[in-house]
Length: 169
Image (cartoon, rainbow, N blue to C red; front, top):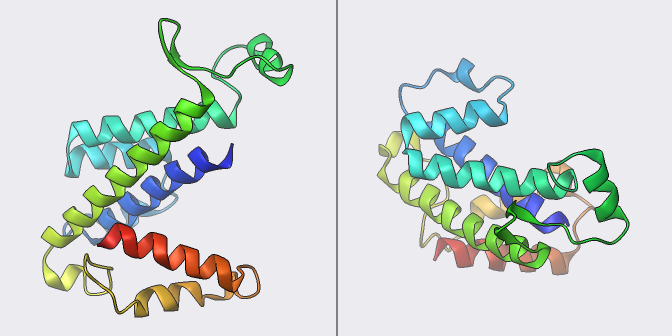
């Protein structure tokens, strides 16, 4: 259940980071940023199709987080072993399909954010990772933050490096 939740938050934070670097958006805009506020900023500063993808990722995340978006009876049915579905009854996704859709959408979304970062003025993105960035110094620094000390095994750090470098290539 955690994968689609993480995929959504990867989209949330990649768009949040990008929008923080966009010239002309007041820093106070990002104080206590909510999901809908970020969705509105994506529409305003990127495009409505990307906002729709973001909102769909959020809906997938909420469906999984809250065992569906329906009434308490439906949630109880999921707890008792009935399938968790997403979408309309005639056009719905199974839980496995939700995971696949979340993974694919998240990767495409993050790649789009990296493309957008590449278009920003250089002085706005000096500290951002870039495609082809194989030095990894920024990733080393990120992974060394106090929050990760002792919490992530060496093996997990290696896997994380490989995943991020794959996205950046």
